[in-house]
Length: 397
Image (cartoon, rainbow, N blue to C red):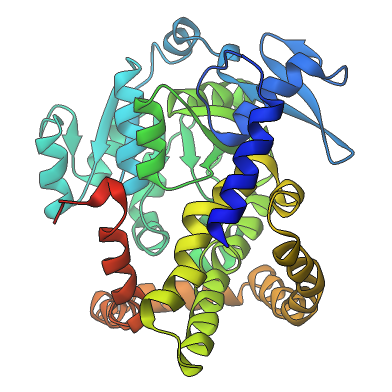
């Protein structure tokens, strides 16, 4: 089916294509840019736009709101301490450093600490133990794991003195304070910028001259300038476009999405379809191609570029008829599971389980066992071979 869809889609795209020059951005950023040009709904103020999202007006902030000169002026007197050099900490810290902001790292000894040294952070100058970095920083970006945030909070809190800023990329610790014991310190701005992607993507898009989409929120505005500084910091860490939310909505949607369509549900659907195909005599390569490869390499990019309806209308009539007939039964079957999942997120059950399991002394060993189950399953062992056959991977190990 993939070849029919791609051929039809390319023909349709060629018919409607017109020469245009658009600055490379993420998908949402590109759509916002086009909408700002063509729509009478958009009102532009220094790049800030009010757009119609499916009938709801929302304000979107873009990089034009915070040119580099304004970013540097905003944080000229600040030391930004990034706690944790995992994927998010690394991506955000490197982007800030490349933007000319004064950044230091707080990281525990180990493999990640050595990686930080290899990437130019200097012990005693720009690389410190976590609590030393907290003490030195005027803006403390808490990008430690959720479990470690809770563990180290009693030692960290006294160092967050009035006038400082406490930054998160996830609303987890503040929203579930009954479990994490993390509360907003008095006299401190408490803010959030949540990139809609992994730290690796944050870094890669920045290096490509693009920008990731991010949400932002202000939980406590002690300075009276928290929103302005949050937007500036969001642009500094590599955001192309930003939209406002709350700590609660960010963490609910984030936990829900990760366990749902973004990761949990998609693995479950891939596995179930693959198993049915294999049980009915299809080879591993055929089952994988019809389940994963065609989805990720052909159809999902079309959905991202033009939407589900466009992808449907640019595939064969047989494929379109089948999809239209079957999406509602899948919707009806899965919606109760999603409703149960959202309830579990909102009532704190997901948080309690995450904190408990991630705090166990044998956490890493048990995690490796769970990941090994997926990694060594037939579907993903087959996938490793299929990926080697892609034209861009031929000849690579």
